Length: 497
Image (cartoon, rainbow, N blue to C red; front, side, top):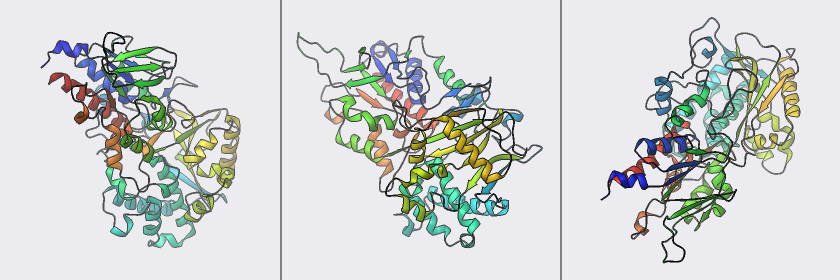
């Protein structure tokens, strides 16, 4: 029907410059679209990938950290081709390479005693087997209706290790640690059977890129965009779609209009919305005119969007042994213990012990005197309201009381606050108990207006991308990237027909 010149007239506005938005823009530009604009609310690109150099010439990843798997991973491919993967001694923790000292996690109990590595290994390998069963869709039928937490408790209860105090406490730590993978407040809120929707790619994780960090991967996408394509500090207020052409008076040449908070507006044939699920939860009902269809709103409501925060502590010098890759905190009554979870589910008491949600403190690549603590869920959100100095002081107190080592004061801290960030509102999506994930992810991904309702009006006015719109690779940067490519391809084939 149309020639290539028509694709040059397709005006596309992309909302958000994370991996989904930049992948979509780069793909469209590569296909010859000449009218692509990316609107970014923040003063920087990258969304939930945020590489900083706060204290030295070495990078800190405030956001995305890992390349999850290698085979079929487009970001691993880019990083490898562009030589952006980590090498050398600073990378030794990242890829379990043989090196002079085998790095290990030190697990400490709150009475200052260390848990034997044998117990830690046995419990964590048992825990991995149980989560693998859920991931591989091999759950017994009696487990399929349970939450992930309830299934794990039940299955672990049959293991001899469950009879020992150390075994039970390390198991609670494993569940608390799994919360950072799931980005949930608790495993008692996540579906066990839906875990198999997520597809893990083969190959080890790279948990640190080369010296340029994730920003270097973003730069590969950015360098293909004409200058001026990305406009930062342009938060979008509303997306008006299905603007029908009218007579002589008010003529809508384009079916979509994107209005920014600063009053600027842009007309377009298509808009690709790549904002986080957190922003959609916050603004979906006010952001779109006409409102989004019920099916999409209910997907936005039903999918989970959790918070994972990092607490970076910088010291004048390292106080931990050379073979130590992290100090993990094992509690007598941790928040992921079933009874503790249930007793804290009502009321506000959990706020008093928010710090119990911290799994521990890991060493940080390229920063020999830094540690990074991990915390998730409502406790993370509560922590975000505290002052950095208070958080730092509590962490030092924990390190001192658990290890008994002489821990100096913190010299600097860097604390993420993804939950309070109004342009993101969290970290990544998960599938809550009782939700059909595939159905919800697909409803979230479907473009508007629906094709069968178009009747001569322009199809594909509003498209959706981002990790939460991928039914297999949700939560990941490669998932986000692939959804951006998916929506760009949708438009490319629309103009090719």
